[in-house]
Structures are given as structure tokens and as C-alpha cells.
Length: 139
Image 1 (cartoon, rainbow, N blue to C red):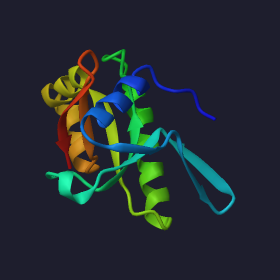
Image 2: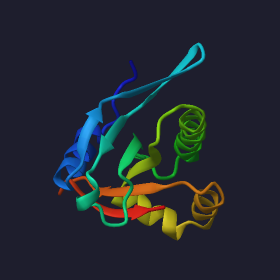
Image 3: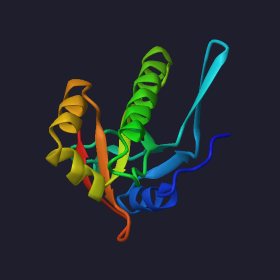
Image 4: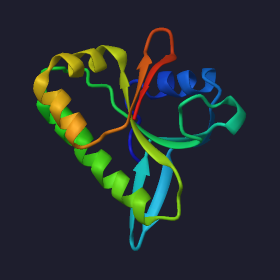
């Protein structure tokens, strides 16, 4: 089983504060003879949802080193792999990359990061690490 990211528990609590029920931690998907672990999966009942999906899977990243492009490259590779696994599975979850708000600000200010995220159509959920709250959903 993979190691949890630095801000895993903070993101989980932020989701729960936002009314989500974590259903899997981690979320394991088996495709043929291969398996992938996505950090977690959660659900929210329809009556409580405002512009967010009902069922999600989230890959949590900490991006502690903002200048290390290899962290973003690895995260995007994982995102694409997990998105493909969800597409060919029977799961009806939307995949999100969960990132701290300080890194989301870096993405919006860096043309290369912003362009890659937009071109790959990466769905993002932004959270505040200290307050443990969701601050933005970006589809």
C-alpha cells in the first residue's frame, strides 16, 4: 500500500467538513492484472451538492518544493493513469487532483503550469492546510 502524502489527513478532514463521506482510504482499482491506489474516494448526497460531483476520487499532492517540476510531472502522470483506470472501470467517479491553496496560487501565476493543467483538463480541488477547508473546485 502506498505511503500517504504529507497533507492527506488535512484534506480528508476538509472534505468531511464540506459534507463529504469518505468511502475508501485508499481507493483501490483493479484493471485486468494491474491495480492502482488512488488516495481516497468520497461521496456526497445530491441534496447537499452545489456545483460539485456526487462521487469523487482524489489524488492528494503536497508540492512542498514549488520549484521542483518533477513533482508536478509525477502528479500529472499519476492523474492521467488514474483517469484512464476510472474510464475503463465500472466506477462512476470523477477524479480530482487535491492540492494546497499555496500551490494553486503558484499554478495560476506560472504560465507553463497553468497551460499544462488546462491542456490536460485536470480537475482540481483546492484546500487550505491550516484551516482544513475546501476553498475551490475547478473542473
